Every structure is written in structure tokens, then in C-alpha cells.
Image (cartoon, rainbow, N blue to C red; front, side, top):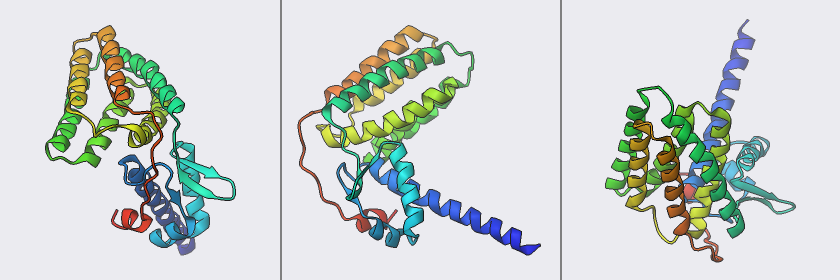
Length: 236
């Protein structure tokens, strides 16, 4: 009777390990530690994480499904490099999706929504106060994903998750500077409009907010930055 139990424990450990590798690579890309164009060498990553290359490749395919990695035939996996045209399409898609999300959320009858959003804003504000840029980036993205979650729009939320990930890559490649404080003010204004049930105003504020981020982009080519995978991922 012990063998099935031991197998179950082994499977759970494997799942935890695979998810850990996924999160570490994804987070390193998301907070701009691994810039677009970085080659993810399978042999090196396998040594860093202590996993086999077959299992590692499955994790890399998961990341590719989110469009944050691209597989190039006979060359391997690279952190995706969105083009200027792709950047414009991503922001167009976000404006359509997120305007609908906040309008839906403003029409919801759940009185706990403003409080939940306020707690998320507090996390973002604390990170900005501490000058913790990786956490600022993460919490800004979490704010937008939380809007879809609270609106109960699961399908759009999954789509938005991909768009937010791709936006992070776009900003890393093209943004002129770090996230500005006006982004926090935009989030705060959105929460106020949602709390007051002003759906059309919330949709308009979302469009202005996203346009502000897009307008900070310099959509001209950038030189690639070379990073050491071990120094970035070993400390995670």
C-alpha cells in the first residue's frame, strides 16, 4: 500500500518544482531582469534549477503559450521581442478589453469591491514609496488583473493576463523611463469611479490611463542587453 502513497508524494514534489521554475523565469521576465532577446539556454537553466532538460522544456513551452518566450528553429528559446506594431495592437486590445471590464465592475452590486481595490492600491503605493521598482511593476499589473477577477470575467481575465505580460515586455523594450506616479493617480481615479458606479467615466479613465503609458514609449529599435542567466535566476 505504500507505493501509491510514495508515487503521489513524488508527483506533488515534481509539480511544485516545475511550477517554481515557471514562476522564477516568468517573474524575472515580468520585472525586467531578463530583457527581450535574451536567449534561455536549456543546459544552463537545467543546471541552475537542478531539473532535467525534458521537464525544463515543458516549462519553457508554458511560457511560450503566454507569448513571453519565442522558440526559434535550430536556435532555441528567447525572451520575446514585440515589434512596434505589436505594441500598438496590444494597447488597442487592452483599451477595448479593460474599458469593458471596468464598466462591468462599476455596475456590479458587490460593496466589497472598492475595499479590495483599495488594499491593492496600498501595496502599489508602498512599493513606490520604497522605490522598489520590480514590485511596482508587479503590483501595477496585479491591479489590472484584479479588475477582471472582481468583475467575474474569467475568459477576458485570461486574455488580459497575456496582454499584461506582453505589455511588460513592450515597456522594457520601448519605455523612456520607469513607471510614473501619475499611473498610481490613474488607478486611484479608476477605483473612485468604480466605487461610485460611474461605468462610462471608468471606461474613459481606463482609456486615458492606458494611452498615457503608451505615449511614454519610444517605438524605435533598441540595442540588446546581455545578461547572465545564473546571476539573475540563482538568487530568486
